[in-house]
Amino acid sequence: MSDCIVETTGGVMLIRFNRPERLNAMGGTMLQEMGEALDAGQKDDSVRAFVVTGEGRAWCSGADLAAMGGPRPANAPGPRATAVDRAGFAGEMVMKLQHCDKPTIAAVNGVAVGGGLGLVTSFDIRIASEQARFSTIFIKRALAPDFALSWFLPRLVGPEHAAELFFSGRMVSAQEAKEIGLVSKVVPHDQLLEVAMEQASAIAKQPPTAVTLTRRALQRAQTNSLEEHLEFEWANQKTCLASAEFKEGVAAFMEKREPDYSRF
Image (cartoon, rainbow, N blue to C red; front, side, top):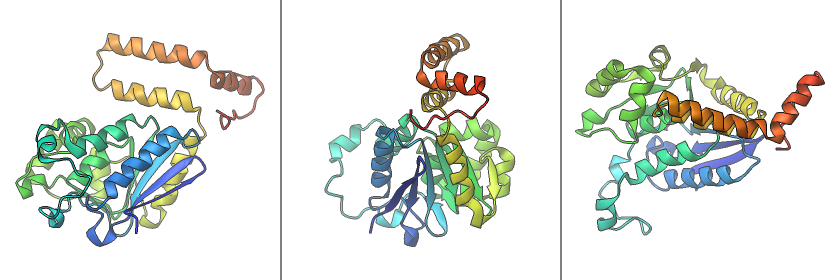
């Protein structure tokens, strides 16, 4: 059985983590399959957005500690390659999400802790079920953060909130997560996927080039100086002004109709 269930409908690729018996811990081929789905979706012009959720009671419970120390997978990097790897598999997955060039929505159905929380924070939008719970948890396992959680979390909730969450490793409810800015909304559990897919479908109807360039601008804003960012924005805007998508947007405005970006 596949560790990820992947389906595409209405321009949205839905990826479901499918290790419910392990609370969707990062073992088996789950992340590998997620990465392959992101790569495929990035190359497919009909895919306009991604939604990722989990089967069972968890979104992702982090590393599969029970599997550590077991046999090394046949395709795993060798000891020397692992020793000199700059960012590890965690870094590779975070950068796949960053570079997929299409909006990503995490539909958090349950527990998201440790590396699972790191993965959640690397999404563009996070929608939580009322049953979702979050924890950095690393400190309780004598570990330091990974999956870029120490980069994303302070930017989402502020450095002081982030420090308290890292040093305590305590569990955060869905409602508190919304209050501190970790998620954008909390919805009834049985409506989670419907709400996430509805938002992704709305994004999928937007002009795809403008969506990608807007996403890149939001990412660059984290590190650019003001001057650098003004230049980056203007380069993007010139690309948009010369596009067929912009012509459709103007024509729709003049003709008093909704624009149709489905052919782009």
